Each structure stands twice: as C-alpha cells, then as structure tokens.
Image 1 (cartoon, rainbow, N blue to C red):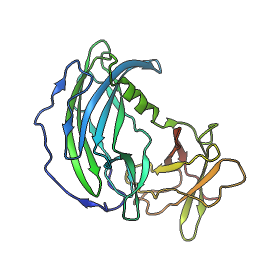
Image 2: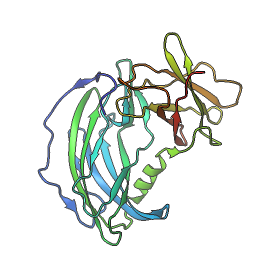
Image 3: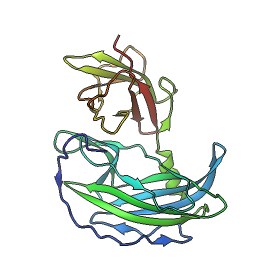
Length: 291
C-alpha cells in the first residue's frame, strides 16, 4: 500500500545482509533470526487448534527491534510503509491468514503521526494445511521497514516446518493473538464499542463523526481505513465534547478529503479499529448520505 503522505524522515537505502536461499528448520520451534542493522525477523511455531469446526496451525512472524526503533501496522498513518508477506513456495499449505495486533499512534517528529509497533511485534498466523495429517513447510518472503530518525528497508527469506505440536513459543503466540482486535458489529458491545458513524457538513469540508463508548476514564485510540489501499484517510481526532449525555461516550471526527479518483463516499465501507488499554475491536461501517 502506498504511503498516505511523503515520508518525513530521511530515507537511507542500504544493502542489507541477505541469504541466497531459504533454510527450513526441521522439527524446530523457530527459524534462525535473519538480521538487519537494528532489526531481526524469524518465524515461530505453535500448536494446532480447532476453531469453527476446522483445524488450524498456529505460527507467527516475529520482528525484533533495537530499543526505540519501530515498524508499521497495515495502515501506517501519515508516513511509513506497511510490512508485506509472500508465502509463495510453501508446501502442504492451503491458506495463510496474517493477524494484526492492535497498534499505537506515535508522533513522527514532523507534525504528523505514524501507526505501528515500538521495539518489536509478533504477527500471528493462522494456517490451513492441505493435508492435516502431514507437516507443513512454511516459506515466507517478508518485507518491512524499521525506523527511528532514519528509516531502513529490510527483506528476510524465512522457512519453518510446522508439525502442530506445542512448544516454547506457544505463550508468545497466544499473547499476540489476544492483542488482535475482535471483529464486532457497529453499535454493539457492553465495554468498548463503536456506537455510530455518520457524515456531516463542516466548514468547507465533509466530515465523519464517530461515537465510541468505553468505561469512564478509559483512554481510547481510534484508527480508520478505507475500502481500498489507495484511500488515504486522515486520523480521527477526539472532539471537545461527546455527543449527548451518555456516560463514557467519546466523539471523534475527521475530514473526508482527497478521495481517490472515481471513488465515492456513498456506500463506502470504512474499517474502524478502537483500542483501549484492556481491549481492541474492529468495526465495519457503510457511509450513508448526509441527511
């Protein structure tokens, strides 16, 4: 996905250490670390589990960063590049789903914000095997960026055989999965919830207003994504006052500007991710016409 704004940090293009072929770690819980200047990446394996009447293999992509360095979420914010995952060449693998732990918003030092992870992250993987009675060989070509004042691109070719047996990486994978936002419908929930999304007219700009409820005093961060990667939406900002008098209501707004050529707001489905210290949710909402 292209950056939503020109990257504000100095981009340093460097030749990173690379390995010409993928080394598959047989019957191990993790692949070897593939190191860069201030970062390293590997695959980790966990146990098989059953969900929705299907068996899945648990695994993950771990990115370790030097203290103070960061990498990005799937939507990087005002600046940055999201990671990419290419599982071509995997064997006995029917599908791989990448799960995204709840991110945080950070100032980028140039008046904007980036969205991502500080010091490292584990991206959980949910894998369906072609034949659940046999091991699966997972191959990944990972692309990512690691940044501080300077931003570096990195690639890592990783491989790991998955047997479905639990091991020492299982707790880290379960913890990472617990940080993945729950998908919930608009307007539902007894704790953190996105109650409403509507369009309204602003001062020369159309505006989106979002009402979120959370226990009193709970800080909430709200992120928004468009229906396609080329939608570069502004970050929702807290409003001075919540709508109505409902206890725990928080109101966020953002201008709906610079839609992609040919795109229309009517009926567009936006994805909102609300994050509090104790939970995170993901909500889809279709934009209706302004009344």
